[in-house]
Image (cartoon, rainbow over all chains, first blue to last red; front, top):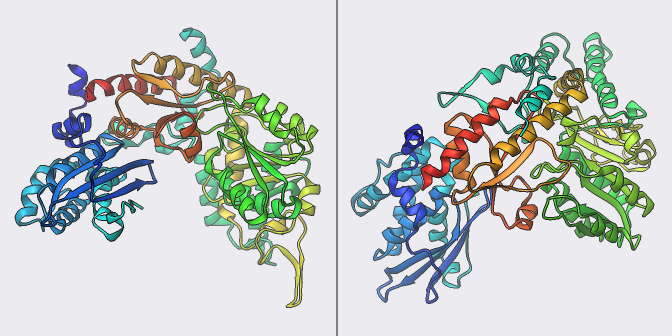
Length: 164
Length: 417
């Protein structure tokens, strides 16, 4: 279709994986038996996301989910996050989040190594937001909430994060 | 739809000639010609404004109101000419009723802080509407919390109009002493029926402050004919620079009000024991003012007035009618608000596509729209929305830009499907 072709230049930002996860976000539900949760706010645009984590006995993240509405970028990022952090330790999850923030800001992540590197390959499509500074926070919102969920406050479900 | 008559009316304003006066409109954005549909956030600047500011800095700049030298006198003349221009723009009785502020937000804060604390008593109520910008909500909440006034909110209807029976009912107990309300919604484009609002408020013993940020760009405002008590607007939406706005107040009210900020320029004498306030309006203008910006504002006002209000209004109406017709024909597009009396601001949502994605895709086509809550979170909630995209128009906006917007919007959903 001609209109699709006309938007070809948008494929750098809206790659298929983002459109897919944006349309059909995975793990988009509240976890009733969550051990940790936190809310993330982007006051600039009104997007809100809540992240839920269930931890395994060894402290790893057994299951992650999220609730909330937002743009395709924020939904896709949250969806990919819930898939990528499952089975990882909180420290690993946080380091992926830190790498994602660099990727979103700069479009690449030269410092990403090891386990993080493999995860970052799946998140690479989110690097497209680096060309759109006002959209960087859409990509990082859920990861801010993840960090908050992993703090003491997250334990009581009182975690709060803001992109500002 | 009557395309021909729409075009005829639009032709009354020579938009092609107007566009040549705005250097920025020939810029390319992401490889596409700029289509600037975000003028309600801030308007672009004509050469007349740019030139006036540059001329001031190159030829007649010094501090104002104090230098006993040639340059200061020239700068003071040029800056004070802005007060005359603002008086003319608003139809004020006296130039001394024009108080320069940084922007609308500061003007409203001045009224809340100075008039609010001195003239309102704890238990008195301030009445706003559900379609206010945050700048006309938060100062009144702060006054409520520090001073014990009540804050009342008049609802808006599903059409996005002020609910007049509810507004009247909120005035009924006589405790509302100030109505602070927008003249035109920055989200819905609705014009408030200000004549009726003022008549009802005055009959109930309340003063009226109008937020004219949007309205002053599109319609002739005559504060004496309206009969309001305060009117506030900002320069940068009126094709002028940022950092300068106007608070107009009735002389007797301004005289009775205490100063807002203290410092130089707002006093007539100072000792360590006490100070005497300067006369109005200088009492409210502490410190070195925005001199260059004032000179730019004067040029912006002159430029706007030279367009002719009838032509500006006809142009805005033509653009708005055209936008409503073109956008409402797009499948899945919902326009927020359907007020009878509305102007060149159109907010909308698109089924299945978040407003930010809409804005980014349009941006990639060179189109600037705003997306989000538009500093009006309570109004968004009233309509059950997280965010909308908003297209807003100015004297330089063309019908073909709106056609281009509609064409690109029609493609957005296909992309996300």
